[in-house]
Amino acid sequence: MRSLIDILDLSTEEIDQLMDCAEDIIANPELYEDKCRGKKLATLFYEPSTRTRLSFEAAMLELGGKVLGFSDGQSSSAAKGESIADTARVVSAFADIMAIRHPKEGAPLVAAMNATIPVINAGDGGHNHPTQTLTDLLTIRREKGRTDSLTIGLCGDLKFGRTVHSLLQAMSRYDGIRFILISPEELQVPEHVKTDILETGNLSYMETDSLMQVIPDLDVLYMTRVQRERFISEADYVRLKDTYILTPDKLKIARRDLSILHPLPRVNEIPSLIDSDPRACYFKQVLYGKYIRMALILKLLEVD
Ligand code: CP
Image 1 (tube, rainbow, N blue to C red):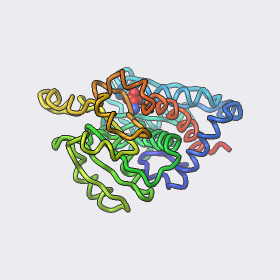
Image 2 (image 1 turned 180 degrees about the vertical axis):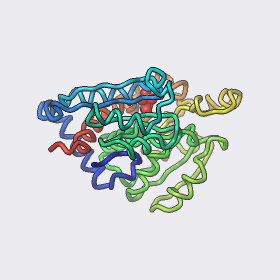
Image 3 (image 1 turned 90 degrees about the vertical axis):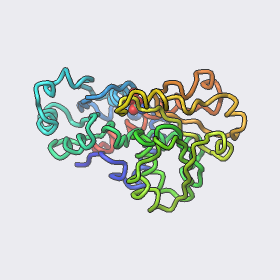
Image 4 (image 1 turned 45 degrees about the horizontal axis):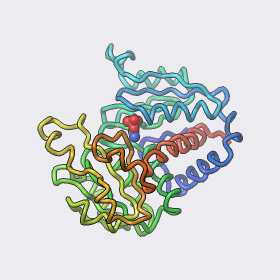
C-alpha cells in the first residue's frame, strides 16, 4: 500500500506515468468513468481550501466513486481532542483512500503511519503540497511540451509557500533547469531548502528581488500569494503583501511564449485584467489538477 506524503515519494518515471495517465483521461474520459465504482475517498480538511478539496472530490466522482469527509476540523472530533493518529484509524474503516490537509507540518505523515488505507498529503503547513506540484508539472508539460531545459521564475512568498518547496524538489530532478527566485529578502526560500535541494541537484539558481530585471529570461513565471496565515506580525504582512504585482507593463518585456502559473488563490499579485493574456495559464492549471488527481487516485488504489 502506497501513500503520497512528499513529492519525492514518487520517482520521476512514476510522475511521468501519472502525467501520461492524466493526458489519457483528458483524451478519453469515458474510459475512466467506472474505474472507481464502489470505492470511497475521504477528504479530511483542517484548513480552508477550494481547489484541492473540490478537485479531489470531483476526481473521485468522475471515476465513478463516492466521497465523504469534512472541510473544517472544528466540526470533527479533533475539536474534542482526538489525535490525527486515531482519526486516521477511524477513517480507514469508512473509506478506501483519504486526502488530508492540516496546518501542522507532518500531520499527513502521522496519518499515513496509522491508517490502513493510502493517505494523500493535500498540504501540511508551510511544508509540502505534492498534488499541487503534480498539477504544476502537468501544466508545464502541456504548455511547454517538456519538463526539462527551462528557466523558471518563482516569485513572491518563497519562505512560507509550500507549493514552491514541493515544486523546487520535483523540478530539481529534471535536466537543464534554471531557477530564478524572486522575493524580498524576508521571504527568500528557507536555508534548508537551499542546502537540501538547490545546492545538491543538477540545476542552477539565482536570487533577486527584481521581477523586472529577470522577466525577459523566463519560460515559466510561477507567481505566489504572500501567505498571511503564516505571518506572526500583521504589520510585516501588510508591508510585504503587494511587493510583486504582475502588471501589463511588466508583461510587455516578457517572452511571447511565457507561461504564467499560480497555484491560487490569488490576492493582488495578478490583477484580473491579466486573465485574458494568452500567457495566463492559472485557470487551465486548476483543471489539470483534477485530471492528475484522478490519475493519482487510480495509482494509489492500484486500479488498472
Ligand atoms: N492551490 C491550492 O492549494 O488551493 P486551495 O487552498 O484552494 O486548495
